[in-house]
Length: 133
Image (tube, rainbow, N blue to C red):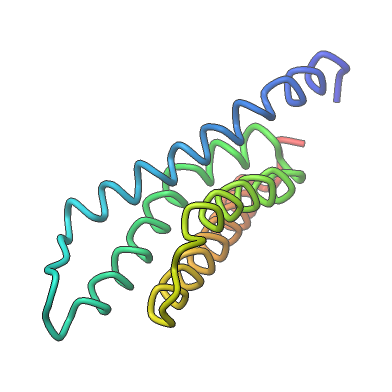
């Protein structure tokens, strides 16, 4: 790898992390729009669990190939930075979550987000033959 390529990857790292955090937020908005939650009802928690999975799926589908293409073997490290940034924001925003259901939904959403992002990057690298080193 050339020095210019390495410098470009390092320079784009904050942009990639911010784009990943922004994409996670936009995916959550899309999931809430596609599957609105009623205030009361027997399926409220099920819909919220589905929203978390849908948001994680949308994020992984849109982010895995660009990350794998740009960062190659270190895309998992960049994905770790994105997941930690989103997790820090979620913990700060959800610090008032006192119910067990709210905590479960937050943990489920973060677990889906991390698993699908890492899995998507692994599949994208495998498909590309890890040619973007």
